[in-house]
Length: 266
Image 1 (cartoon, rainbow, N blue to C red):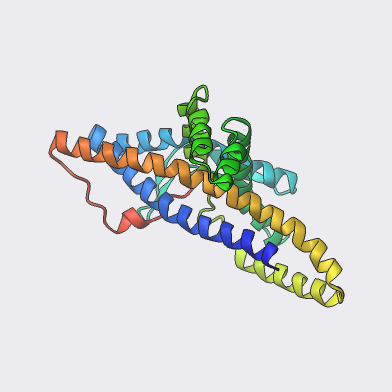
Image 2: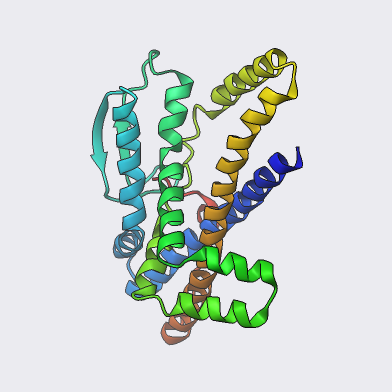
């Protein structure tokens, strides 16, 4: 059971950290853009351009998931627009939520950006930065090996480009409020299925066989979220420094009120 619980707890804690970090990043990245250009409309454009690779992946994964699941799609937009509640929508994909869609397909469409973002981050982490070597160095506990692993990552060709791609993807992959609309019903269905499976599987063999792929899935999620957190920490430092420098140069500061805590929808 511990083999199953640990990956789930790891992914859950990392996801909560990522959610708080994303809110801070979206608010302060917008604030830096506002300090830079001094106009709210231009600040939105700069803010959206910085996150554009992630927004593109987010909306493309919505569209692809809806298409593969046989759900008819409508308009697609990658242009930012202010919502009536003050939040900022960076893009959207329209699809028709008739009764025939159901909570399972709607939930899968809503979760598609999270899955796509996880895959992209894992691919970059494994094949570009060789995070497996870094993980081995951390487990070994040898400072010299760890220093060599970090130096190898920093020496990666176009390292800033790859770090930026992880940053843009990780800060646009989390489901927005509209993406989570069908999740309660989906979780109820999954809970009922789990109870049925547990009842039918009187022996622990069936449950053990089901637990293994679940643990692997959450292990991948935890790894991707942890990579995103590490990269986001670097960018949070850069954003905070840029905001402080621009504030000092221009003699101004950004006041973050209630709307700073509103999520940015994609």
